[in-house]
Amino acid sequence: MLGWLVSKAVDVRSTEIKALCWAWLYSWSLLLAYYVLRPIRDAMGSSGGVHNLPWLFACTLITMLVLNPIFAWLINRWPRERFVAIAYRFFELNLVLFILALWFASPEQFLWIGRVFFVWVSVFNLFVVSVFWSLVDDVFTSEQGKRLFGFIAAGATLGGVVGSLMTYALVGAIGQPGMLMLAIVLLELAVLASKRLLHHSSDFNGVERTRHDEQVASGCVLEGLKATFKSPYLLGIGGYILLYSITSTFLYFQQAQVASSGFSSEELRVRFFANIDLWANMLTLILQIWITGRLTKWLGVGVVIALLPLVSMIGFSALLLWPTAGVLMVVQVLRRVSNFAFARPAREVLFTVIPREERYKAKNFIDTVVYRSGDQLGSWSYALLSIAGMGIAGISATALPIVIGWLCLSGWLGYRQKRAEGEVG
Image 1: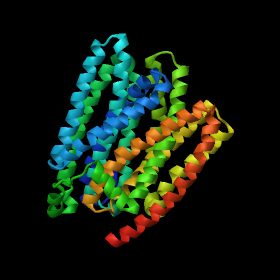
Image 2: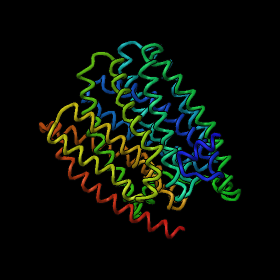
Image 3: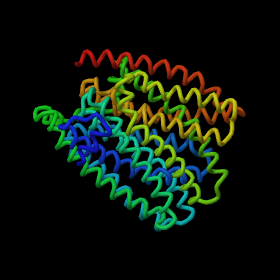
Image 4: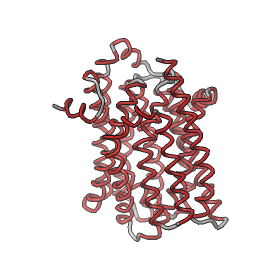
């Protein structure tokens, strides 16, 4: 029955159904945990003032650089299944410590706990999602990715919808410590789903490939850097992520400023951010279930990844003409819909044509260090532009040349992916 329902929503083969369902549950539980934590992070970050955000982004990048070699050392020594379980349970332990800190913190200590939590969630998000997509890229081929990644991403989006609703509804009743407890349970569910996904991948990959995939690939910051800069294709993917991160940071700072000045309590800020997450994820979910996979298959990866910079160009143009808080919120929602419904699943297809060893080295570097470097460039550029007296309109004008270059890069990446897919096939 479940297989029949899934086959009606997505172009899936009978041998792929079990693995697809576990991948969907994995993405759902993981992103549900994140979207329980995300509004709390954003509220804590904005409560200290927007002027402190560049420093929090800087701390996030430094933390990422410190942890990346440890991440690489562990992934080089443990099979995937064991690594996923240990990594996620390490984050669960961190959440237990945050719960204790929130229970016993004084008002003066709460501000610093919030800053640490902001950095922690930012690091947590990139690492756990990078691990998820690295595993999924291993299990499914490029051809399968075009058909199935949209549906898998829909699981993540539904997790975002449920997480936003739960946070909005429950934070007043059980408080922030209670929400963190819920996230721990959801991370444990993600561990279970990852194990079952690997088990059922042999249904269509064969025993030989499954055993080969159990051998993890090595990688560290320097190796990821070398692998990325040796390949124009990987360098292009890194550039795509960098430009996305820079422009996202511009919009995030404006959003944080609205929350900081418009809401007087932590609970109201949490609900404000949860409400934005909810609308973005609901629209994304509708597109992912019925449109994303088919659109990627019909139009190709290049066209689909170009939709995000195209929407960004239209959005920044609108903010240049109408620099209001209402337009800013609409642009933010539409950009996130374009990213999660189209760009993110199509972007993962770009990695499926890269040899596994090279992919593990470069992907973690791109998903973490390059992404957070874009945060840095965006946050400090925003601070400098603000000091220069630029408001929403001026910063939007500055962003327009960036998104035009980003759009051109998308077309080139689509061409290279199609050519590489033909060579692999």
